[in-house]
Length: 341
Length: 248
Image (tube, rainbow over all chains, first blue to last red):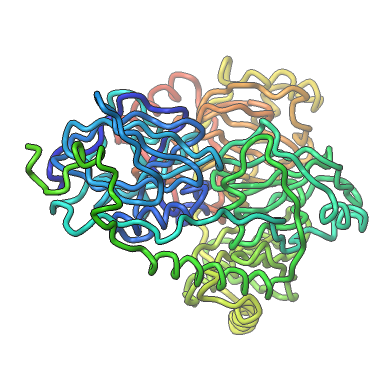
């Protein structure tokens, strides 16, 4: 179903993988959900290139890759809280995040990943022609499962794209670049908040934590005031949700993310509400984070509000007017399919 | 026995409901690892699978609780608790079918590096350790830690030992291990702190298979000791697709 070609990896970046909204169906077999650390950015990137919200894109951590387009023409968009793409050549031009651009075969682009977040997403029109596994194209690297051969990209990989039609219509951009939300991450207490002292619950709301270097797609180890257990830090292992704050014996919380193990044996004092999971997924080592406790009804209301805001952002996607296009880009960007052949 | 083949399980006393964030409901049946509590978890999972409540995304059974993951945009937490409670009331006795599976295991030489220590600490001969381990039938309480990693128990009292003080950084795939009241098989090469007393010739997790895990929660497992030569032959037969473990 591929028109032939896709995206060739010239330099892979630090940690580039294929991710979608995750694979919940194999958890009972011990397989982590995986998927995008920042589902909000992934959904916006997909909207910009006309994909369904759950289409798989390239997730780029820390430093971005250099890619070459091998499809006849490919519409791409970078969803990054502070990043851009540079179209290489004698006369390089910069394409900002949050807009689509159609690139002709042979174009090389270098992605400057997000400076404001650990992750950025490169969405490609039509998505990647990779067979889904249990309904998902997400990569779980430690298990070698899903995505592109179960691993991070390496130089020489060529990911086929699924688009059968040349990109049509004008390029699209967000009406306003989104502002990353700030403020405390909102937590729903539990499910094992009764394993902690009253002081621990108060500390959790008052203290500032710092994301340590022990941070990856599994979770973030946080440094800050210890959270005291009432009696012991061992529980009988049970199922984990994304966003759970698991507290081992040293009292330093670990914020579980998309590659978390399906079960865990430390008490979970509270869980980040789903509306704030995209923000949690963006955190980088050194970032400071505060928490506030809300109840389940407030968490559900927050999620509905976030969904309305995201829908409004998507509804506000506008065509890129001719005058807005960087003149340098026009020389390289193939806006009329086939001309570059 | 709580859940033999074709047995019926009484879910009985009301579980505790707790949110884990706004997209997961924990239904907790106790704080201990025991077959009866685990059978209630499995019974509720079975009842919820047939109820197919809208907006429920995944069911994740573990030792003593069921994690019900749901779409918070489609489900209200309080409504979901009420509906799960209703499923519990209607399904007070749930028919559970568990498979009985016999896995060959070689408890010899380099495949069993911790067997001498286990024997010494248990005050038994290595042969007696093997006999004890192979004589019991184990319930798969849950899969977790690694894809396809089965937590099986309960071990005979004499074999219950703590994890190694220093975990191994790498141990071979298909290692048969024990720790506390549990026995397990490492599906993949991985780090691990359990004591290695043997190996099985079959793969516990193959992503291309359906289902991808050889074992599932609720299965009853026994081990049949085999000599090294038979183990190697079974491994070759497994790889050639000519051997599957006996299941009933």
